Amino acid sequence: MRQGQRVKYFVQLMLIILLRMDKQGLAAKMAVNCLKGIHMAHLGLIGIGVMGSAFAQNLAEEGHDVSLLDRSADKMAETVQEAKGQGLKGQLIACADAEAFVKSLPKPRSILVLVPSGGPLDSVINMLKPLLDKGDLIADLGNSNYTDTEKRVADLEDTGLLFLGMGISGGAEGARHGPSIMAGGSRQSWARVKGPLQDSAAKFEGDPCCDWFGPGGSGHFIKMLHNGIEYADMQLIAEAYGLMSNGLGMSATDIGTVFKGWMDGPLNSYLVEIAAEVALATDPKTGAAMLDVILDKAGQKGTGRWSVIEALHLGAPASMMAAAVEARNISADLEMRAEMEAAFGPSPQKISTSQADAVAALEQAMIAAKVCAYAQGFEVLKRASDAFEWDFDLAAIARVWRAGCIIRSVFLDEISDVFDKGVAKHLALAPVFQEHLKANTPALQSVVVMGISNGHPVPAFTAALNYHNMRRTGRSTANMIQGLRDYFGAHTFERLDAPGEKFNGPWHD
Ligand code: 3PG
View 1 (cartoon, rainbow, N blue to C red):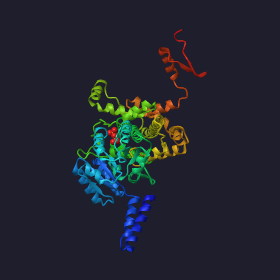
View 2: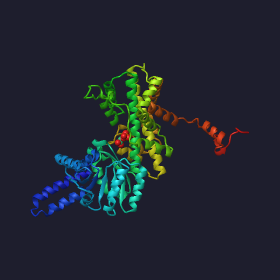
View 3: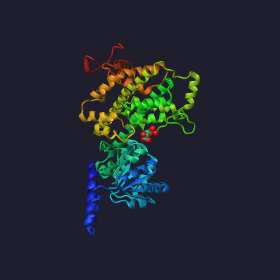
View 4: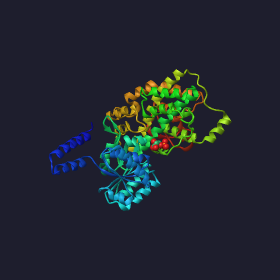
C-alpha cells in the first residue's frame, strides 16, 4: 500500500473513532479538515471529451473534487452521472460557463486543459486569462509541440500566471485507470499539481508513472519522443505482420497466436499484446478477420514527424522513427500505390524459408530492432537535454514509461536500471542490451535479407540494422565524404596521423 493511502486510511479510522467519542462534533470537524489537507485537491478540468471525462473520473476516484467545463453541457452531465453511478469519492461539478468555472475553484487555482493542441488550446487560454489571478496555474495535457509550450510558459509567466506542459499517454483507458504523465514547466507549478496527478497516474510496483522533468517545453518534448518510439515499435510490428502474412501465407489468427507467444519473452509489451488482440479479432459484419477488412492507410497526428524533425535538428539518429513516418506517408497515398503496382507488378513475394524458422528469426529480429529503437530514442533525449540544458534524468524518463503508456514494456524496467546505475554511455553498451544485441543481431540480419530479397518493404528493420552496424563500425566510410567535400569545396579534412589539424588534398595541383 502506498504511504499516502496508509495515511489516508489512518485518518479515516481516526475520524470514525472521533465521531463516536466527540458528541459536539468539534474534533470530527478537525479530522475532516486534516483529511482534506492531506489529500484532497479541487482542480478545474476543461475539455470533457473521451480523455477528459475519463481523467476527471480518475481524479474523483482518488478523492479529488473537479470542476468541469466543456462546450457540451450534455457531455459534462453524462460524466457527472457516470461518476455518481460509480460512487467516486471526489465530486465532479459541471459548470455552466467560464466565470462559474473559475469562481468554483479555490485560490490559487489549478486548471487542467485537455483540448486539441494549437488553436483550441489558445482559445481556452485566452478565455481564461482575464478571469484568473496572479499565481493561478494552467496545465496543458494535450499533445502540443514543445516549442509552442516554451512560448506559452514564457508568455503566461510574464503575466503572473503559471503554465505547465504535460504529455499524457495511455489513451482513454489510461486516462481513466492510470496514465503515464510527463510534466515540464517551473518547479513551483509542478508542486501545485504533483499530488493529484501522481495519485491518478499508473503505478509500477507502487511508483507513480508521473514526474516532472524540467522547465519550459521539456515535458512535451519527452511525450513527443515517446510517440516517436511508439511509431517505430508499431512499424516493426506491421513489418513482422507483413512478412508472416504476405511472405509466409499465415492467417491473421495464426499471426495473432505468434504475437501472443511473444508476450512470454523479452518482447512482452502493451503494443505486442494489443497486436495479438487486433490480429485475433473477427469482423462482426462479415465474420472475416478484422485485419483483412481494415483499409491499409495509416493516419498520424504529427508527434512522430516532429520527433524526426527535432532529431535531425539536434544531430541525433532517428532513422527508425523516420522509416515509420515515411511508411505511414506512403501508405496514405492509396491511388498512387495501386497505379505503381499495376505498372511494376506487386512487390512482396512468397518466402520459401520454413514457417517455424522464419517466425523464430522474426522474434529475435524484433528484440534486436526494439533495442535499437529505444537506443535511438534515448540518444535524441540526451542530445536535447544537453542542447537545451534540461538536465534530463534518463532513468526517471524510462521509469514513467514502465506502466500506463503505449510503449510500456519489460525493456523499460531494464532501461531505467541501466541509466540508474550509470553503467554505460550508450544503451547498447550496457551489459544487458549488449547481450540482447549479440544474441539477436544475426536474426535481424537474416530477416532484413529475407524481406528485401523477397520484395517485402522492411524499412524499420533495415534502419535498425544499419543503425547498429554504423554505430559499431570503428572505421567508417566518412573519409570518402571528407575527400569529396574537400575536392569540390576545399572544406578541409583531418589526417589519421595528425588529428586536430586541417588539410587540403592534392586534387587540384
Ligand atoms: C496519440 O498521441 O494519440 C498517439 O499516441 C499517436 O497518435 P498518431 O498515431 O495519430 O500520431
